[in-house]
Length: 158
Length: 316
Image (tube, rainbow over all chains, first blue to last red; front, side, top):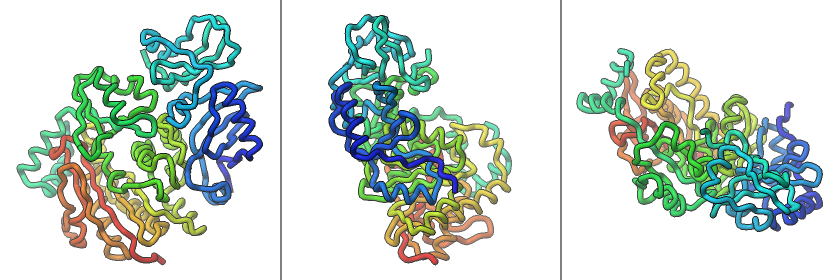
């Protein structure tokens, strides 16, 4: 039988390690989801009612393509949160570190995919770009600019 | 809009003369710009407040405030390009297409299956109603359709879903073998799409009786096999976006006549017509009157058909 998606759920130790990174970088201390690793450094979260055992049992019977939603990508010691997940209230309310506020007039350019031409002193790898109550994706801290990481399909087409 | 004579003849049998005229006129009317607030990410009040800064917003149904109509004149693609849409705060969805999930009424306590889910408008609505909890499997046939489905689920922040790729009957058979059952199932089947003529005018040129016949057989099989993995006492909603009785009442009549199910009342915040009990030379089970038909002329929406069944005994 062909299993499309490997159900590789993180054990408590690995989940704690990820949580430590999330807390260090973004202030996130609680992740009340099952966490799955779906590829090198790619992680998803699942909040549904199926247990680890039930998910594994299902994966042996049917072609599971996707479980839950993408949450982040970890490369080396850097963790980048997914554009679509940061506005979920349970996650959004915890984010209190490494945010970078932009003004209303910069929102359009940022959402079109432009980098932010700002110099930062911060050692953060990534910033969460913020405008008022909206979290507008992540940007990579390149010291002399913030590199736009909004996925192409989420950018405002000019 | 150019309609095939066979289609016109059939509509003339389905509706009286006055209704027919209204139906044909409605096809040339501009459609409503409707959206549904994604309550997984934002409250209805907050979204409304934001959107009212740029658009005139109407909430046509008091009991479903998440459904909004944008009454302003819009540039092409304006609703899709808005930041609120890109952030997943709302989903662009035709009003009548929101009705099947409302009829299913899933909660976080349910085990739910959306059997033919792509592009995901109803699945994202279901996840929203389940508050990202409960057991939820969303299935579709091809990888291309799964990609669209998963993109929409991700944008809306759906975290409680398991997305599977199977031909619907095959999925039901596999789940049946391991005794996996659901409390609620949506069977929104592939159909001839006669109800979507305004949004998809090319459907008119594709009208074909053989296609309807072929679809009818597939739909019957999908509904029957879905019933097998529904718990006794569970509910199934069958829907199409077509007016063809062969794809609607005929399927429900067959199930009512042969399996332990009860048809349920369908209450909607829209004007609807009851299911028809005879078509051409066929008499249907009288209880199909409880099905609802949504016609474009009645609410300025697309056309839809919805039936709700409750399973009252095991199916061998």
